[in-house]
Each structure stands twice: as structure tokens, then as C-alpha cells.
Amino acid sequence: MPYKLYEPQYRYSLPRWRFMYWLLCDGDLPESIQKRLLSGPSIQSAAMWSGTLTTLAMTGIALYRAPDPWFWLWFVVTLGLSGYRAWLHSRAKHQWRHKSGVTPTDQIYLASLLWSLSTGLGTALCLLSGDAVLQVLAIPAMVAMATATASFSHGTPRYAVLQILLLDLPLKLAVPFQPEPWFWIFVVQAPFFWGALYLMVHALNDTSTQALLGEYQSRRMARLDPLTELLNRDAWFREALAIRSAGREALPVSLLYADLDGFKGINDTHGHRAGDDLLRYIANEMRHALRYEDILSRWGGDEFLILLPGANPETSRLIAQRMIDAIGTLRPQYPDLGLSVGIVQCDNWRGTDRERLEALIAQADHALYQAKQNGKGCFQEISA
Ligand SMILES: Nc1nc2c(ncn2[C@@H]2O[C@H](COP(=O)(O)OP(=O)(O)OP(=O)(O)O)[C@@H](O)[C@H]2O)c(=O)[nH]1
Image 1 (spheres, rainbow, N blue to C red):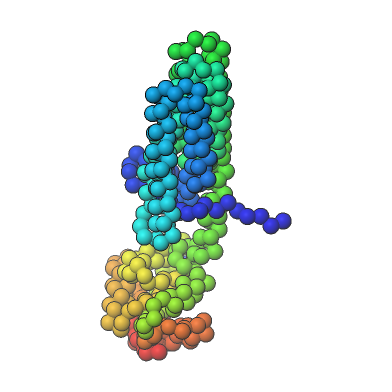
Image 2: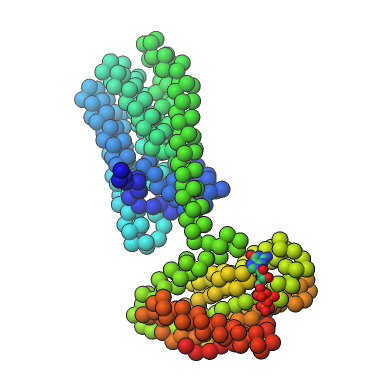
């Protein structure tokens, strides 16, 4: 049966204020999951508007029943906060759509906390007003809002707890200051109510986090070589072919085919596990020798394929030599270890398809063969 997964309208960037980060994020999770949890229903427009409309309806009824200056203040604060929150949401949506920078995550969550506080204080006022209608309205409205908050904000459990307390605590604190003894029942049941919401937030959070982590891991495994965590062949092809459409003018690229020298001997002498550790270490060294935009993969065994977009021959020589030198620093421990690199230069990447790319790889492989023939530990270049 077809079904549609819940997708947030847009993703929020991580909070920048320290306290907000602590309140909203779990630093142990990958950033993409933190952002996904952060962008849950709690700060999507639908949740904001349902909360806002409920509060506005309550303030309207409160003003109708008892046009007290405090209720006027509650009404004005709710109206002001609603406008501010609507503005923040439209800014966030715009920034996300146009990828023009960070979203105002801190402000959005802070405004939502202020709404919780003003709503909590407002319902406490309803209880203190002595008006039976307002009192009867305030209690179920607060139970509904606190419960909805727990499910909406489950992606951010610390924040959810604070929000529930801001909403519900003032009402409970108001009970001793009004004459009706039956309202004490809400104070007595408070620990059970909050405890149940706490458990619900954490159970929902656990389920969402585990599901997102599972999805994250399977995406990673489909993309990365498990030993070195570099791109695997398929992902490399995808990324390499994806850059062909960028820009209109000719885009020169270099393709580097790198192969370790003497690696078999290291496996034979130090064991396969030491060989694995070395491959991981070398993958990291290569990452550091490259630029952000370069596309690096473990092609197989002790071979690596690297695409350098926009690189001229001089840059590619420089990068190849940088990688050879980086591996050279391991000589004191592994005297026979080295790196040979075949380089193929391509003047214009535009219009490249898989077939042409495979032909370029074959040329780079040929250049690598020549580098090995020339005594290893060096690079050899040819033009496409
Ligand atoms: N430890 C480890 N070894 C691997 C892995 N994949 C391939 N190898 C080994 O890497 C070696 C690659 O073979 P060659 O490239 O011929 O070895 P080499 O000594 O570097 O040869 P030259 O390139 O001619 O210098 C083989 O011994 C493979 O068993 C791996 O994932 N882990």
C-alpha cells in the first residue's frame, strides 16, 4: 500500500546559541539527524498556527467574560508573538528555499518558549479570575496543549520538557491562590501527568532517532567503502558525472589514478590487520592533501581514484606530489612503501558521459603503469 513519509516543509540549521544547542540537540548524533529532529512538527507552521489560534480563542473568551487589564495584556502579547513567529517562519522558509544562509532557529524556538510561558500564565489567570467558565476552559485546554507539545516536540526532548513546564506549571501554582478546594486534584496528579508525558517524549524520541540512524547508516553503506570510508566506485561515478552540468564555460579537470607501492610486502610482514590500519591512515592523509571540491574514492585494494575539478596541469602535479610526499613520511616504519600516480588531463569536462569517463580512467591507469615502470614513487601525466 503506498504511503507518504512525513517530510518537514523545510530544514532548520543548527542553533548557534550555546544554551539553545544544549536544549535542542544531541551532539552525539550526526548533524543531518540533528537537523531532521530539529525540523520536526513542533516548529512547522501547522503546529504554530494551531497553538496560536487556541490561545487567541482563549484570550478572546477571557476578554468577553472579564475585560480585565491582565487579559488585555495576555491578548496583546499573544498577538505580538504570533506576528513575530509568523515572520520568523516565513524568513526561515525563504532562507531554506534560497539556501541563502542559516535559518533563525534560536529565535524561532525562543519565541515558541515565550508563547508557552505567556499561555501558561494566561491560563493561570483564568483559574485565578474566579469565573467558572474560564476555569473550566483553562484546565482541559492546558491538558490538551501540554500533551500535543509532548508529541510534537519529541525530536527535542529537553526542550519539550521545558515547554511543558512553562505551559502547565503556572496553572498548578495558581491552585493554592483560589478558593475552590477541588482544583487541588490537578496539583496532586501533576507528577503522574508530567511523568507520563516525559516517558512519552522519550519513547517517541527513541523510535525516531533509531529510525533515522538506520536510514543514515544504510545510506552511508551504499555510498562509502567500509574500510576507509572513502567513496566507493558507484558513488564516485555519480559524483564525478554530476559536476559536468555545473557552469557553461569549459571546465578543465584532472584524473589521478594512485596505487601504493610495496603494499603486498607490508601485508606479508606485518599482517592483514596492520595493512587495514595503514589503508585507513593513508585514506585520511589523502583527504588532507586534497581540496574540498576534489572527489576521492577507494577504487579497490590499494588503488585510489581522484577527480580534481577545475585543476590545471600545475595544480594536479602539485597535488600528486603532495600525496606522494605524505606517503613518504611513513618510510621510517615501512621502508618499501610509496605511491605512484597516473595523471590524465582533460581540457573540458562538459558533456562527459560514463563511457568517456571510463576511457579517461583507462588512460590514467596507463599513465600509472608508466609511473610504475619509471621506478615507482613518482607521477606520470598524459593528456586526454
Ligand atoms: N590489508 C589489506 N590488504 C588488501 C586489501 N585489499 C587488497 N589488499 C592487498 O593489497 C595488495 C595489492 O597488490 P599489489 O598492488 O600487487 O601490491 P604492491 O606490493 O603494492 O605491488 P606494486 O603496486 O607493484 O608495488 C594485495 O596483496 C592485496 O591482498 C585490504 O582491504 N586490506
